[in-house]
Length: 122
Image (cartoon, rainbow, N blue to C red; front, side, top):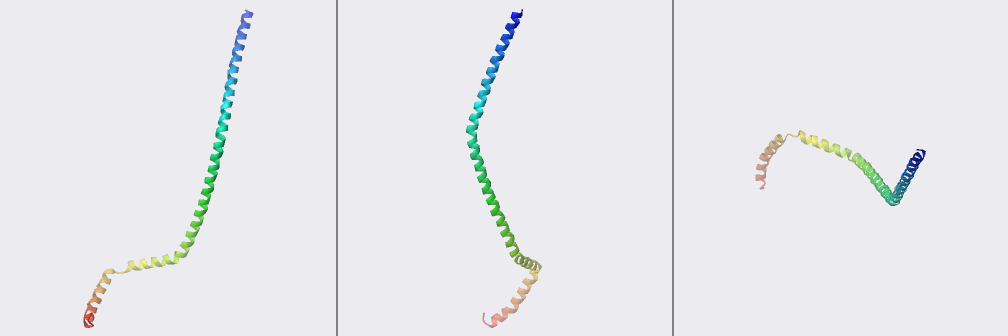
């Protein structure tokens, strides 16, 4: 019976050795795949990061340009302030005009000027 137990133990040890060998081979395969992926992906990632860096620099340049444009517009608004105020005053004045009275005044003036125009031959 001891012999049979020793045989069973030897059988389990051989099986354990075989499975550890399979695991080692699998680990080596995974390591090879990781190394190959790193060799392939690292240059691509490096290029991608360089492209992202260039894009960020372009965005920063555009942002600086936009900021200077906004500052210029703010200065232009300050310069146009009095002109805009006078336009608002003119608009308010135009809204206060009574156009029906203005039309009546033009008709009255026309009726007075028409005889004078006939007198001078026009």
